[in-house]
Length: 479
Image 1: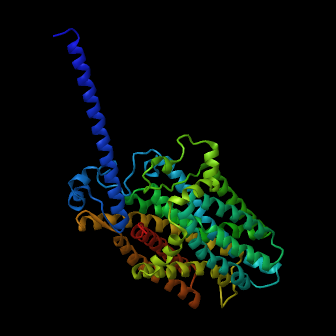
Image 2: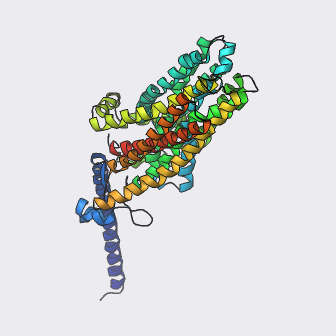
Image 3: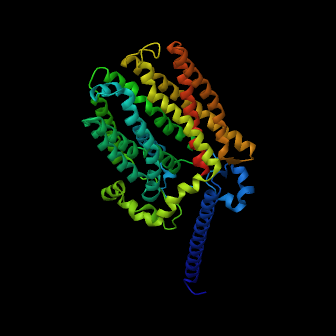
């Protein structure tokens, strides 16, 4: 044997071994990518029925696919959506990073109804200045502003799906600040009503974007708990202004209440500008560079993402305007969803209506009302704050418990409808609460009876809204 033959042979063996390793890794990478695409398709087409228990995965998805599933840290739940291997996938963000986004979007969810309900606190003072009645202030301002909050949400969803969560939410809040300035400086009732209506339409984005942002960041089994926090924001928002600003209006000019609302809206805009991130992650794209953007997150990229330039660039990879426009109709024709939404609209709507008209009834002199002054009326709204906190705690544990029971009953498979069982509990509280409120007003019972009914009804609104939001979002996630 010639000198050096063993060395050459050894080098060839090392090269061949290296090439085999590279090929195995490439094949493994291809396999993971194929499995990921398969699981993404499975989730989109089975959004309301997903296997959640890892033990049930082989029977539902097959042994080969089940081996590649990513699980929760304790191994008890399958993660939906399945995270990618990219660190910029919102599902892979740290808990601290996710929590910051949740706090900001919850504050944004407070602004629409908070702005609209400032008129409740200042209704009598505005009526005096504009030479009209408090009932007229509610009719031309509060009622129409609340009505437009709903329609603003429909258009916001279209922009969110096309251009992303962050720019849509940011610009809606900027317009909210500008219209709140208009409310503060309005010289007459017509201008005030117009500004309040525009504010309701533009500011509502925070009340619909939270659904997307939470599901962007958190896996299915954690979404209910996080959505409860966001839901608590906009359920609580209609009573924050009458409670806190009611005391202010009793001692200062009513324009200060709108001025404080403007400052709050501006703070939310600042938080978005400096700390909020885009959570929309285009999982269907095969090119991760397109999905992620540049590796180095420069100030320029941050600014372009905030104001929507990045969203405009990415729009060509997303649903077309025709698809986005028709999505509303595609969802609405489904009887099971329409029934749930109508049920929530009635339950939530009557709760809001009570908040709007309660101050007028409480201020009426006996025997038609309680003859309360501004400070007393403001104090009664504290009951709603207590009720929403109770409702959040009830929803947090009840909805999670219903998920666990349903998964066990369905042999490891989650069905979105299981969370709607919470609505039965909510209806019982709701009926009891509104009967007590109605009897208290009609029969002139002690204010304590009214407060107890108010608390029961508000607990029901919080519990029911959480259940509907979580169930419908899980069911329609693939739409």
